[in-house]
Image 1: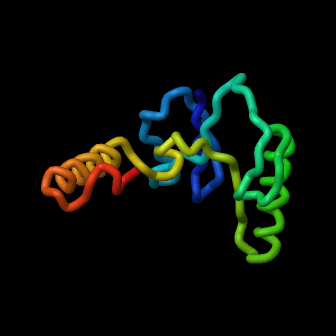
Image 2 (image 1 turned 90 degrees about the vertical axis):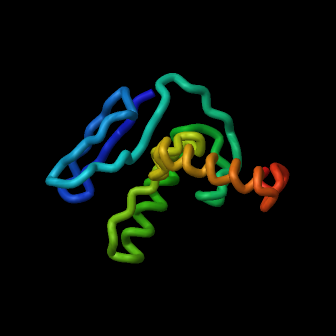
Length: 121
């Protein structure tokens, strides 16, 4: 899997095959902007973010570009909508430490009887 990073200040982009790096550019931490698997299959589906049926990756990427351009025109703020894997937590700003902390929190709540395992499913 490759991971792309984009500096929010200067717009420079970087691609690395590891997601466990801390990248800095222009004096600030550069967040991961996208991740992708090379050669993965694509399943046609209804994409809720786009509000349309997407038969292939190319159609989906084009639709995200059109949506980005429309939002940028409307708001005057540059938008860059990209598809993200929902299982790629770091793409959403969730670190492995955050996940561990959340699991610990729920384990304690279950142990104390505050919630049941069914409550979090």
